[in-house]
Length: 151
Length: 151
DNA sequence: ACGTAACAGTTGAGAATGTAACTATCAAGA
DNA sequence: TCTTGATAGTTACATTCTCAACTGTTACGT
Image (cartoon, rainbow over all chains, first blue to last red; front, top):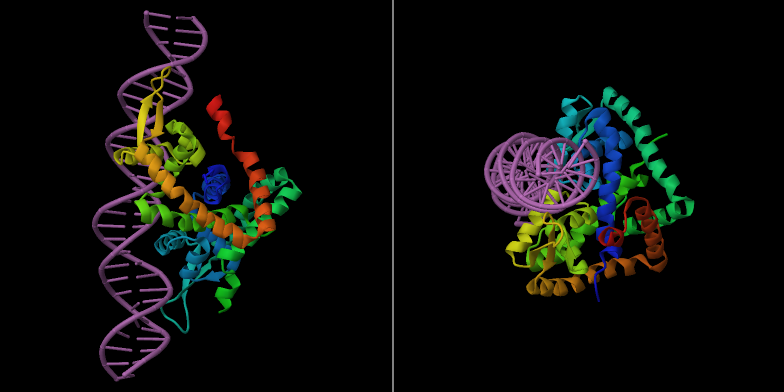
């Protein structure tokens, strides 16, 4: 019973996550000087329109203090605003501003292009296999965002 | 052309890497109080017997300063020793000591068990798909360890 | 209504990290 | 041999992160 790291799931995921992140960060770092936590919060907001910090934290797997500071940084850029929740005054409803939205719209194609390059080099059948595996793994560990948001 | 994070590779990998690492770290944290960088360096050494810090750095995707500190911490525990290279005195040949080896041998089954739990819940066909996808991805980005070591 | 517990988000202090500069060594060419 | 440039690994400093404590608010049992 021996441990072969090349086949060990956490090892493989960590290494690949690092590589893919480094690859992807090129765009948002050079274009806008965003940090990784900032980008992650930003991308979630870009897609979902309005979120709470807790939601961002959960779906980015980032600690809530990290989110807090990322949101603050994006707020200083005037890329987002915080609104109140009618029913619960503890909650902040965070939304991108127009400039934030514009930056997001310019960034997205660059990010997608980088991913597309990788997927095309991977080939369709490998890409499909990867997706199937990831889907199954997430099924075990990740609660879908919609459940949280509607509930 | 819009960005759907749930389908975006770097996002998925980062999140899953985080989840799997947290899951796996249980064992080495509670048993031995190892940090993540320490565990990674340790696991590589456990598997390969002797490595240089540069090799550890490359195959763990950790920055060389991180490796330097992890190695130092493991050295303080007396879990590894540094030896000289005959031909190149810049190089350190790092090897586990007997106590290091023993700790490694006790840790490995715990780590494998945690992974096995996940894989069995995943099911064979999903696990196979995942492996195929990871293999293909690594083919693009990761040079096999043996190439480096023999070369 | 009151007290207690739970939750959303922020802040501060100490730990961990990355960048750049450094030492020591090696390799290659004039 | 001497110089220049590259490499292995460490150290210093500035940034970033995590943990715990905190504020303000809501939920709930009595």
